[in-house]
Length: 234
Image (cartoon, rainbow, N blue to C red; front, side):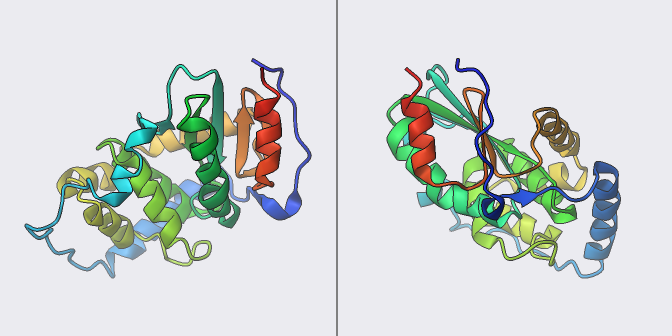
């Protein structure tokens, strides 16, 4: 494993952390209370809806997903990303960097990729991360990850409200009762908080932040930088 080093930061490609964990939890509670006042009844899934094994899920089968990890678990290179679902640069990273990593290194067995959802941009970040982990419980983290980034539209504007997050689960054919129970009871909240603490311990101050066998890369930097680091790991 290469010794850890910090790559040059690109301010225009990274979203900085803002609220404290305590402020975040309080804000989420308030958002949850407010959201109840305008909750609508989500219709039951129709009998024609699939069990979630649509094109989005099938696209990941060749990547051998296990929870939040893609690729061969014994691959020599491990890439960890700390990412916030509200972060615009994280969306860019998902659409470009991750897409290229899949093709060049994950599918070929040279690298495995692990996603760590952090909540640093406000209450909707926390709720989105919780929802994604509830989807992970049903083996649908990656399709849900994709839907969240496709839905992203600004920070804390009500986009990731409880109704929408549950609808995304329904659209993917998840067991709705199981998802709702996980989400409403906050069963994965402590896991998100633990990831936040881990990120803080590793010196993550903005998203996205990657670690490639310990080498730190901050921001949605040009993909060539990832190639240079990986190709230098012989």
